[in-house]
Image 1 (spheres, rainbow, N blue to C red):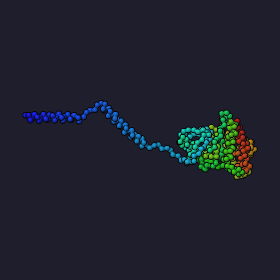
Image 2: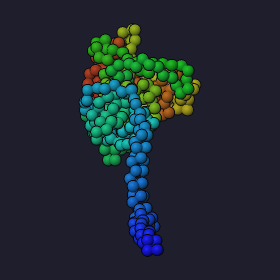
Image 3: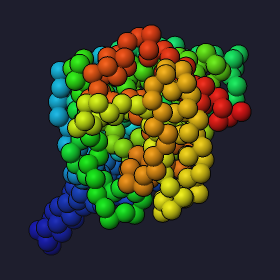
Image 4: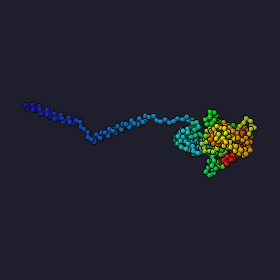
Length: 358
């Protein structure tokens, strides 16, 4: 009996000890504070993982490619802006490219490349583009104060040709199927050896000064020997310049060295492109050639009607081509290069322009 009681007592003690030890391994439900802390930690860890994944995804996307242009690098050099008004600075060599700034006449730019008739310039460490025709190595002359002496009229002058011709072709008129060279080289003086483009620029610059002194606002197509604008492009520039008339300065040539005299070209009233302004062109031309010949004593060849001149056919304002004389005539060639005779020519042309507006 005693033995049995001892066994029962031993079993009870062992059960008590095992129960006490087992309580240490029992699951305990976390408190509310502990649950919130875990969720917060879990979310923090989750954000820490997901953010890098988002960054990696963003970095994996291909970057937008910068547009590429066909640009020829040139030795960096400084050029002056010679535009009569503001010159747009664009992101690309096209009028469709966004304009980001505008330069004033007389501003300087650093040219580092060329793309067609555009120049690549550097500004604030970035590359931009401007039209080459409005840049020059020479500092432009100051414009006359239009507000103080203006007579209210605007004249566009085109010194014919440039240093070299442009053999590429363009339509002879808007929508025309007839193609002509964009720009001819011009003639050469038999006595002076001077290129027509040099002579026309000399006279045109003097005409500009004369007209400004008379109160006109003047727009110049070019003021240097380098102007890669075609005949059509020059006409379009004149159309968009705000000018009322377009005066194109040229010199003539002939196989006969005895031929001499001045003539102005104008369109006929049958011209399909400029019929609406043909009569005004003829009036302007006649007044200009009369004025030139009266001032110089040159032979007056009157006006000549022509409908195949690209520089006329693209015009939307009255235009005349002034052939001042024949560079193939030795005497006339020398006369046209004489500064005193040039002054007489520009005064005569200006008189004709005065007559047109008066």
